[in-house]
Length: 223
Image 1 (cartoon, rainbow, N blue to C red):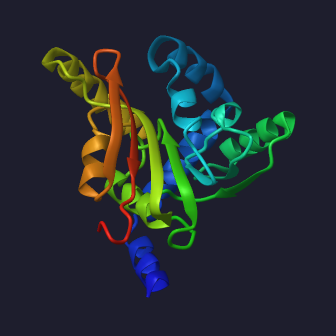
Image 2: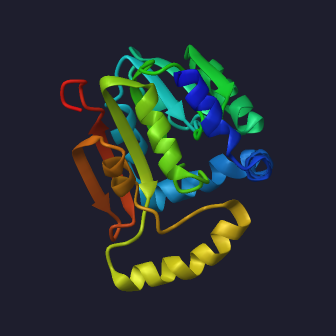
């Protein structure tokens, strides 16, 4: 039954949009690390480290990109990473090999994850829900592949607290969505709450436009 449900969900995805996303990230794979290094210095700070150091057990990183999180995970985790872009994954593989990290990498869509229900203890997603076409579906998939009591860890840029900041984001979003599918006014917290997760910690900084959160999938007796 679960497999039929996953097949049904996958069948209503827009294949043209998925292909555009893949091509976009393949083209930008070579410049991604350089661009992100600057943004992390001025905007995201220690966000990646904050997320990854709380991961335990069997860990799935959704939209792993070029593997910029790898250095921040504890050595004890068993890590699997998925991304829509083969070019990004190739860079992640190189980074993992150079660091001597044992990691399973595969092409995959956050909106229809190819893993069994409850396969992971922790799911991580950093700076990616902003550009996944159907973020609600992606969060639902993250919940599905987590075991009961498993932990979801997120970092992303979000709609700002101040009205003036949101106004600027709205203007910029008219460009960023068209060019790379990147949304500036999303709020993963609301999506995570709507999916039925229990929020354990949520922090916003940089005028409220960066948010990191920790949530848990309820145990079966809490659902």
